[in-house]
Amino acid sequence: MSFTVLAADPASSARRGELVLPHGKVETPIFMPVGTQGSVKTLHPTELDLLGAQIILGNTYHLWLRPGHELIKELGGLHDFTTWQKPILTDSGGFQVWSLSKLRKITEEGVHFQNHLDGSKMLLTPELSMEIQAALGSDIAMLFDECPPYPCDEAYAAKSLALTTRWARRCKDWITANEPRSGTGRQHHFGIVQGSIYANLREQSARELVEMDFDGYAVGGVSVGEPEEEMFRAIDNAVPFLPQNKPRYAMGLGTPPQILEMIGRGVDMFDCVMPTRIARHGMAVTLDGPINIKNLIHAKDPRPICESAHPHVAGFSRAYLRHLFRAGEILGLRLLSFHNLHFYLRLVSEAREAISAGNFLDFKKNFIDRYTRNSQSTTP
Image (cartoon, rainbow, N blue to C red; front, side):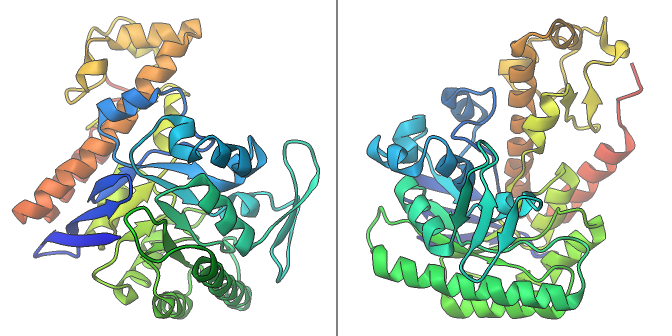
């Protein structure tokens, strides 16, 4: 994998880069739409192309359970299976297993849990996570880790981190034994920094992973219920110890202002289910903050969602979109999902331009001031 820093903002840690992967180039900072079960909800792959998506996510846990990684491999891998021929990142399944707290037990071997689909007993190990992701054929595979809950005391966080580090070494051993370390089509692997809210543990985790020499590094265990300031602090406590010449990924984030704050801290890659999830509930993100299109105030509004709406969506009025949601029409979900993802992708594109121009902090301040001050949810 080749990662090149093309520009650095003089007044922050923001940087613009280019990531070269087996299925194409990715410009960073980048937002990655989430396709949990091999599909970005409600959208066709050609629409993802239309809105400018460069890389999407697949979910190891869900694809393993249904339809199964062996079937996907037999049918040509996740790219052919989904018809998406640009880069794909797959997560390790660790976060999904973490979310099944009442159905799982963590041991040295891995995580024992009940299949949420049929209740059968399952075991996901670091080696199996790597095997599944290799079968899926994603461009980037994440290491298997334990995501500690928030809040947790330092003793628990330290024990959890030690387990994550041991699992990372097992992932590394599997990769070394099973995958070629050269060639244009090889899969790339990102380590995941853990350590909860504890600065010393975040530093320890970052240093240990860097010593193992992975292709990139993520900061995990954020956006798990902690206050926003703790989220930012976790990034601040990890990023300074990660290599300048490799990509950095903040997992599961976040709102548009949060993404800009993270870019300013030196993060290159983001994902979040929020744009499509809130779209399915009638929420649209705009330059003036989120609006609920189902509100009565939009019943006769002829305006588009916002001034920067993509042409694919801009021709539809707020009144029509509200009608679609009230009538239960699927088109409403599709249009708002498309719009919200385009908003996020446009945001990171403009951030890239601001970094190259050397005025990222001004861009960030102006965007956040408007986004948080002028919410249109209660205005005509």
